[in-house]
Amino acid sequence: MSTVYTIDGRAVRVLSTLSCGRKIVELAYEDDGELYFSGEVAIVAQVFDNPPVEAQHKEITHLEAMAARLRDHLSMLQDEVSKAEQAHKERIAKLKRYESLKFVEEFLDGKLTHYVIVHRYNPECIRISTPAEEIDTENRWEKKQKLLSLFGTPANREIGWWLEYEQVFPFTSLEDARAKAAALLADAFKKVRSQPYSAERAIASAKALDIPVPDDLLQIVREYRQKSAQQSLDEARKKLAEAEKAFAAVGVVS
Image (cartoon, rainbow, N blue to C red):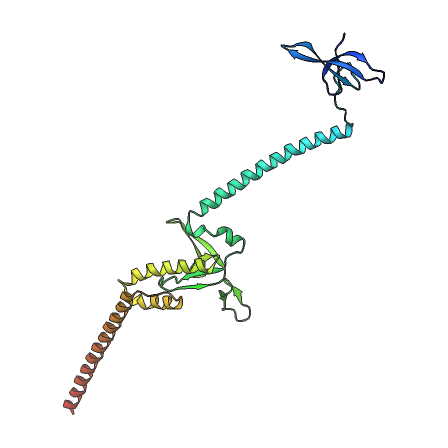
C-alpha cells in the first residue's frame, strides 16, 4: 500500500474509498527517518501522490521579490540615517562642551531670542537685548540688524560671539539670559571691589537689570565718592591758596 499525502502535506495511506469519493486514510508518523502507521484513521476529501505546495501567480512572486528588495533597501537607508543621526549627536555634543558653541544649532535655525551683551572695554557694563533691538543706526536711510558673528582667537583657541564691537552670549529664552547676566555681574562685583573706579558702572548695570547690589559694594562706592570729593576739595583749596598768594604778590608790587 503506497504512501500518499493529504492537502496539508500529511503522509497517509488509503484504507478505503467511500461511495461519495472521500477517502478513509491511516495517518503516518516518522521516527528516526522511518515512517510508521499507528492505526489512527481519518476521512479526507482527496489525496495526492506528492505533497501539495501553494501555487502563486507569477505576478505575486514578482511582487514579493520586489518587496524583499525594497525591505533590504529600506533597512540600508535606516542604517545610514541612524549613523548620520549618531554622528550629528556626537558633533553637537562636542560643540556643546564649549560654552560659546552651545547655541550654534539654534543660531543656524534662527531660534536665538535674547543676547547678554558685555562692553568690550568695560566688562562691568552688562545688558540684555534681543536681535530685533540691535539695529545699526549709522545709516540714517536704511536701518539694518547688526550681524552676530562667531570669532576665534588663534593664540589661545578661544571662541566667542561678537556683535560688532561687543561680546555677546546668545540664548533662546529671557530666563536663561537673565541667569547668565546675573553670573557675569557676580564676577564683575568681585573685580570692582579692588577697582572702585569701575564699581559705579557695575551698579548701573545691576540696577538696569533689576539685580540686587551687595551692600559692601555700595559702601565701597560711597567711600570712593567721598575720597574723590575730598581729593577734589583738597586740590581746589590748593589752587585757591596759590591764587591768593599770587594775588597778594601783585598787591605788594603795587
